[in-house]
Length: 241
Image (tube, rainbow, N blue to C red; front, side, top):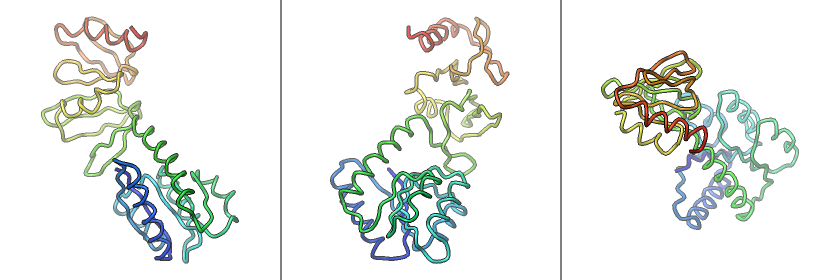
């Protein structure tokens, strides 16, 4: 599913964009959109700030009262929002400024179905590729996107998992280690160590028959029989066999 925000002060333009998105879904089996409509930049920014709304894609008008779409885009980027932005506007005047907010596309109204579909193909493809290297996890009651390369290790304590991240922070997940490993096992760098740990091999400093030393200065003692299969996975990961 893709979260898509439409922001325009004219209802007919919102309707037009939503209708084109509906047509796109019909032509692309398995593509599901969750669409939120906003009639001002203020409404959109409030949703992002107060409700932790993080759309994957924004179709954003520039000329709106009170606050322009360009100013809204800058605020979104300042808040850390990385969603793809497609500007839909009536003038070419701000095309250069769009680069400053890392916009994916700048389209001048009236926007045709073919124009929008072409941009959607590219943007959704980029989003899908990007998703392959992130996990969406519920942390402190919020859905957070965690980069795989930031995960050093995970330690199970009952139904809580303590996730150790490369920035020195720690996150607590309310799930079992098997549930978390199901999410991580598709990535070759993650291995399960005994019953209580998951380790990212790219963060291993050294490995011997007794323990793994990680690059965050933590060590994990190996249970009996764990060293040989772990050693094989370690060399396979780094050497390809």
